[in-house]
Length: 96
Image (cartoon, rainbow, N blue to C red; front, top):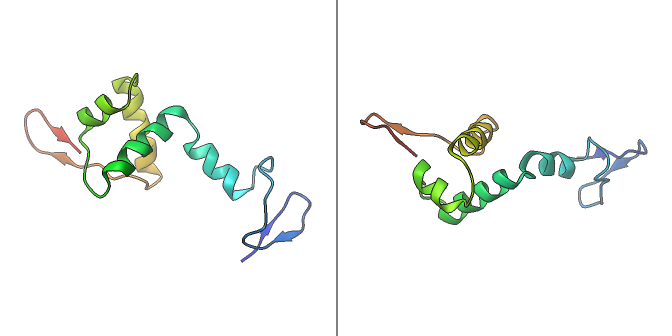
């Protein structure tokens, strides 16, 4: 597998890319998870893997995050296939 560098030359796996190139896979990953809330959320989830973390527990473990920002962050991670959401049909609903 090869990728093209900013100079148009093919690069092989293991070769250094150019983070300034928007097509660089490493840059695309950093753009995706590089926000403060995303990285903190992923860290907490990774520490608990493979166990589930409830929404309220996750909010307690990410200092300073609002309910809205955590919700938006989790929706974005779910859209990208990085987390799964499970809602129990209880009153009030339990979200994992």
